[in-house]
Amino acid sequence: MDMEKNELFLREMESELHDLCQPLTTLQCRLELGQMCGDEVSLMEAIEGGLMETARLFEGIEKMRGQLLRELDRIGNRAQTDEE
Amino acid sequence: MRILVVEDDRALGLFLQKGLRSEGHSVDWVGDGDAAIAHAMENQPDLMVLDLSLPCRDGVQVLEELQGRFGRTSVLVLTGRSLVEERVRCLNLGADDFLLKPFSLHELMARCRAILRRRGQVQSPVLRYGGVEIDRMTRSVCRDGVEVELTGKEFALLEFLLLRNGECCTRAELLSEVWKMSPDSGTNVVDVYINYLRRKLANAHPEGQMSAPVIETVRGEGYRLSKAGMRMGPMPAGVQWREANARMVA
Image (cartoon, rainbow over all chains, first blue to last red; front, top):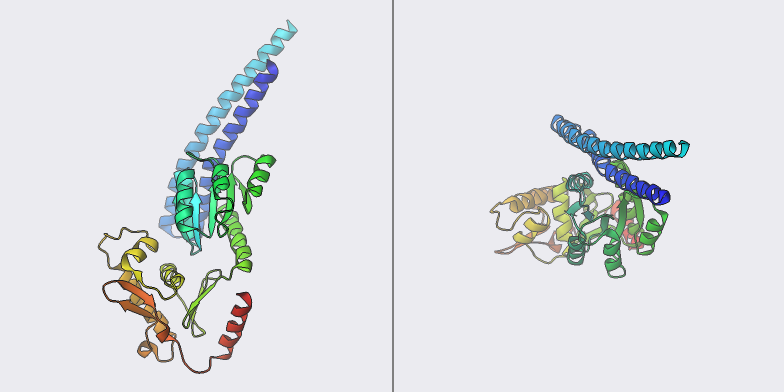
């Protein structure tokens, strides 16, 4: 049962990590493109777009943090049960 | 070169398109596997930048569908997962290279250049008609051996005319293929850019604006390249060398 839960957790983490890659790549590309163009309009666009991507990153990290805390709770509860 | 970006994340797809366009390529973007296959069948791009996680049909299914059918299209696969089995499978299905997300736009562009360079060793990147010659890798243009500086759009227009090898290209075709605009948009942008091109190509000729035109107007239809604009007599030494070199490449 524990093995299954561990595997499920790892799969979820892999999926969340995969989802984080998307906004991170977009952020990187936006900033690089802004730098390549170099003019004021492109730089402003890069900053505005970059902030949108960081918002997506925050959401992803919040989701991962929630899953991680739930998993830590589960491990903590199990350790407590084992001690008792 | 013609590149197709297949990426379901709209923001990322559009940025990859913009970045690759800044290198002078003609770049289209589609967001799902079915659209990728339809686009590849119709346009046979030189390079496909293919994300693996796609709606409708995923990247692996796109590769399976394309395998053996489009020898002319190279494929750079993008993925957010680092599974070795996945990479091996894609390479076995004909992918040329892999890039793991997150990645840098500079690395993506460098990998695209490397793939296109390798293609260039098999397929000559030089297109020529009459006295006009373009190198699609170095983005250089010459008329009778004299270098001509063109903007990205002027280059794309000349490239399209050269690919038609002297056949007529309608205004509607040029508008849709070079500008990605509807043929009904009522703009005269094609005629304006044809004039820019004619002027720049004429300036590279000793007779300047009096030289025979490289681009002919086909009345009521559009434009085509003309061999009448070729310079007669012996070519400069540099041109002879390049001609011999080009024959070796071809």
